[in-house]
Picture 1 (tube, one colour):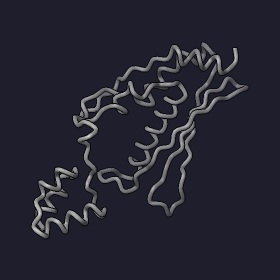
Picture 2 (cartoon, rainbow, N blue to C red; picture 1 turned 180 degrees about the vertical axis):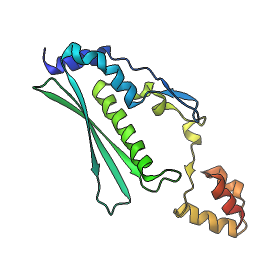
Picture 3 (cartoon, one colour; picture 1 turned 180 degrees about the horizontal axis):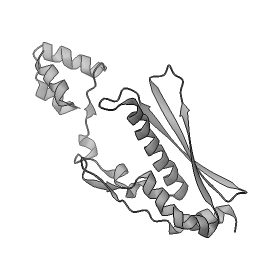
Length: 182
C-alpha cells in the first residue's frame, strides 16, 4: 500500500477525543498530545511514523516571531508533510518567555497534526468557542502603548467616561484602575 493510501485510511478512521477542559471558556478541546496518542494504534498497523519538527521564523530583532511546525508521516521510503505557522507574542502579559514559546509550540503542533489528519477545526471548541460573546460583540483588547490606549487616556483626561471605553474595548482590572486614576 502506498503512503498516500495509508494516510487516507488513517484520516478516515482517525478519532481524537476532546479530553481537556478549559475552565475559563467552559469547553472541551483536544491537545497535540491527545492527537498523537490517538495516532499510536495506526503506526504499527500501517508501518508508519509521525515526526514533528519546529522552526523559529524571524530574527532576534523582531518584536513578532513565528514558529513553523511541520508534522510528517513516513513509511521509511516516502513522506507527506503538513505545516502550521503560529505567532509568538513576545509582549504577552502574564507569561514568562518559555511559556510564550511553549504555548505557541503547542498550538503549532496541534494545527499541523490537524492539517495532516484532516481534523475539522469547526468541530473543535478552540476554533468555534466565542467565550460567551457573539462574533459581532467581540471587543478588541485595550493594550498599553497602543494608539487606542493613548486615545483612551486623552478621552478620560478630557472628562470622558470609562464605561464608554469599556463598550468598545476589553481591558483588565489594572488598566481600568489606571484609567480611573487619571
